[in-house]
Length: 285
Image (cartoon, rainbow, N blue to C red; front, side, top):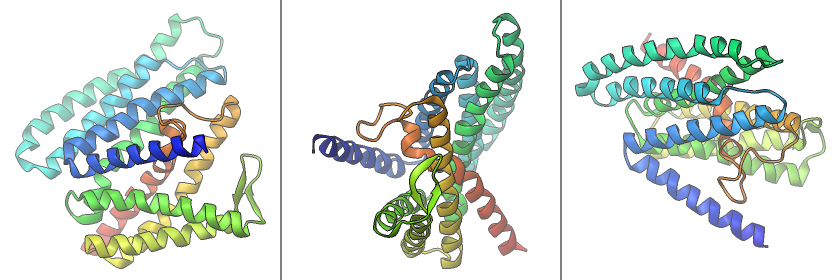
């Protein structure tokens, strides 16, 4: 009961933060995503260290944050064309800085005397690709969904993910018989997987109504997000199983770490981004 209370209160606080990020405007939204980048990368490096790797945290975090900030200036140019010239200058500067940080990850390994230099470099760069890069794409996804910045587009993307989780859990508990990935996540079932897709489609239809968008686009987005979100959860479970830990962190009492709460976004957002770009391209041509 105590754990349920803590989990509920933590969930309420998290929901309040998400709503504030959405309705606080593009800067609040970007700050929220940057928080996920910084904390998520730190948690990932902790997981990597638990497996015996020695990721270069400072360089990795600098590269991930630089990539996100550079993407932010592209994003803000879409939202506010008046800032586009400044954004171009910052884009050039950010890419120059990022271009130096990546080879530095290789160079610094020469002076650490580690027995696992390849593993160290790989996990350092993985933090950037696994956490920072998907959050860069999340900057643009609401624009592609609604044609302009829309807090509801962001919120219903999350609601699709959460609807998928809730329906998958309820269906799995009620009807789950066939295990999906027993070695990595014994509780996931194929019945739950199908139920999760149904829940995501329902949330997608509601999102289409609220945002006044294309129903076909929203249902396609919901299907893409639902399917890939499951793999996002499984990927993080795979990492934690190798590290021998239950949660990626404890920043969210009762829910674990930042990666535990937003792992679905890390795998789903690249697929959603590609889907939305292709859909937009088809509509134009």
